[in-house]
Length: 88
Image 1 (cartoon, helix red, strand yellow):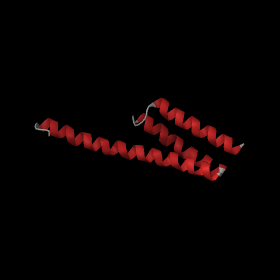
Image 2 (tube, helix red, strand yellow):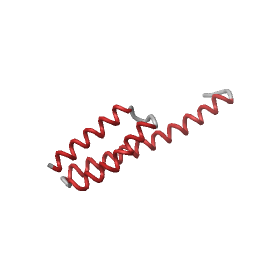
Image 3 (cartoon, one colour):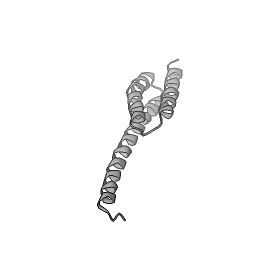
Image 4 (cartoon, helix red, strand yellow):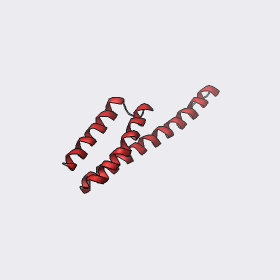
């Protein structure tokens, strides 16, 4: 348990930041899930539009430090490849 005023303040700040990060991570995963559901249904048009909305969310999460830059790029790349395969 924090005893000093500064430690108590840091505890509050950490809790607030954790909630924000959890929200951003959840939002990113939701957008990714929408693309995956569209891919599973076999609807190429829906998958493409879902990917176009998911890509900025994934990259925004990487800019905010939620996921690593390379992880975000890899996710976008793999989703784009699957959407391209579905369109072909």
